Amino acid sequence: MTTERMATMALGLLLILSFRSTMATPVDHHLLEKYKRPITVPYPDDNPTTAEKQELGKTLFFDPRLSKAKNISCLSCHHPGMGWEMGIAKAIGTTGIEKPMDRKAQTLYNLAWSDSFFWDGRAEHLENQILTALFAGKAMANTPEELVARIKANEGYRHLFQKAFGKVEITKERIAMAIATYVRSLISPVAPFDRWVAGDESAISEKAKKGFMVFNGKARCNLCHSGWNFSDNAFHDTGLSSNDVGRGKQFPKVMAMQFAFKTPGLRDIAKRAPFFHDGSLASLKDVIEFYDHGGQVKRASLSPDMKKLSLSRSEKENLYEFLRSLSSDNSHVSIPDMVF
Amino acid sequence: MFHLLTLLILFAGAQAKEFQLLQAGKAFLDPSLEGRAAALNQDPDGTRALALKFLKIHKGDSIVFKNRDIVAHNVASDDFDLRVQETGSNSAPQQFNKAGEHLVHCMIHPKMKIVIKVEDP
Image (cartoon, rainbow over all chains, first blue to last red; front, side, top):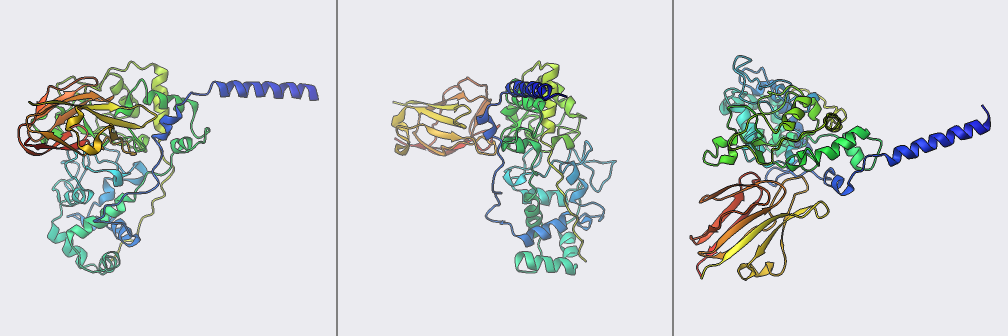
């Protein structure tokens, strides 16, 4: 090949590249600012974090002996490889598959920023949510007395409690405090989307970038899935066909709370199928179709922010690609040794 | 004579990254708020929350809640529920006839809350 031909080819390549860059998806950078990861993790004043408390909490989290039948642990419904959820529609507790819980297990990512827990937000503190899971009949079904007695009888735990709290004194509240401290440390790891927000233009595809604009534009997802964790921590009836009134049980007279559930964050969402509180939608593509139709049922409590979207096929594909860009790198969670 | 106040819930646009709660009827505002819009920030994590936490009004005053945000709201307290207000809509005037402190909040976005102190003139 002559030098001249090579130069011509190089020029052609340059032209193609510059054409590509002019064709790049226009993105509002002020918009990207809204999705920047936070720098610090908030812990409550009455339960500050320490390495020792996290270690105790993690051991408890992975320990099946916390459940009545010693057969399930927190991990049984919250799998780190599935975005801390479980790929089944309704969580299965000690009562087994014949009597599953009423709703799907929720992700544990980024709960340090949350101020209401469960799908209906009925627990105001993570510690209370954990106590409910430990003792509810369909969940771990233990009793406070039995749980505390088991932990007290365990020399290894007595040592861990001494390290974590400065005292061996073991109570159900301290068990919940330690688990909550560990759970608050579960921050969704950096995803390709975060690298893009931080300035790496090659971190996600052009399709995903277009999808981000659809997410914040025509599809209106950002009205509720806002901020870096993609949740407004608020409650909406999105029109899912279901008899579960959700937050309506706590507020029976408030129309807007009937069939309303808390907006889930979207971190690692591609690993968290099936979707919604009852796991009734199998795939992300089903979820996109759901919102494209403006929900499944029209009723008085339906959020007025739910509208038929009429997305094109390519808009749906781009949206799907964007959602996949929220999948973090492997979180490399190690399994702690159990104590005896 | 009783007065009508207006609480505006505004979406201030992408650049400001905040919502604003603006008021007409400044005579009834807490003096510290005089001359400026009381900011209503969106928390960095995406949660909608009112920055104005406290407002003093007189017994018998009414407030019209105007939703100028980009999403629906549902203003309520223990005593009333103004039901869902779509973007752009105004509530009926809500009169405050009981002296004391009333926690007013959005049912949909629980962190949007304000204490309205009703005083006997």
